[in-house]
Every structure is written in structure tokens, then in C-alpha cells.
Length: 139
Image (cartoon, rainbow, N blue to C red; front, side):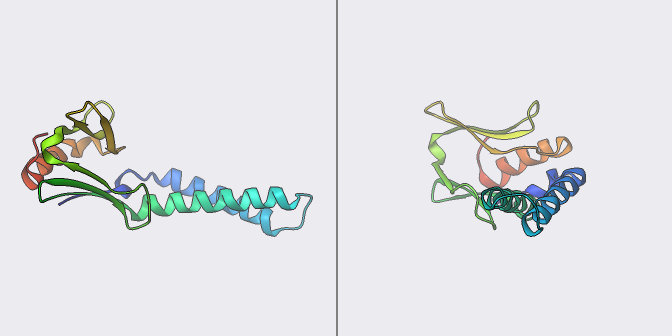
């Protein structure tokens, strides 16, 4: 199994900015003011979505595993996109793109799937090596 933690790309500036914006939204929602219930509900929903996104960035990881000839890609522990399963025989390329810092899967049908983004530039070669060694898939 290869695990790519999302927190390695979490910027402290982004985290502080999102937390501050969520605090402002929450203060508007719970405070007395001229905002109507619809506006407060929209702000509460935005605060929840931003909070969830920040928590996912801090806690989640993308896990790749090969079992029984099938490559499985799972994001978690917080629910995110559903798992992806691809037969290893259908994988044409699974590698880190140095220019975009993404982990890209290309299938025999010509499909391209971005499995992870914002990978650390210094770790791209190590991730490619892990994919070849641990998963047995050429990068």
C-alpha cells in the first residue's frame, strides 16, 4: 500500500485564513443583526463546508493498494470522493507529473484520472519509486 497524506500540502496561511473566515461566518450566524434567516443559513452552510474541507486537508490521505489484480484508490478517513477500482492490466501509466505535481493514472481506454494533487516537489521521485516497488505498477 502507498499512502499520500493530504496535510503535506496544507499551507499554514491557508489554514489560518479559512479558520478566520469560518469564525466571521459563525459570528454573523449567531449574532443579532440585519441578516435574514436565509442569509444566515447560507453562511452557516458555507462555514460547515469550509470547516469540513479544512479538516479533510488535515486528516485525510489517499491510499493506493493492489489486491487480486485490482488497483484500489481510497480517500479518507473523512468521506471524500468514492473509492476507485481499476484492473492493473488496464493501467497504462501511474506516475507523478513533475510539472503539475499531480499523481496521474492513465488507462488503456485513454482515460486520465488525477488521484492526488499538490504533491511536494521534493517527494515526487520517492512516490514514483513507491508505486513501482510496493504496488508493482510501472510509473
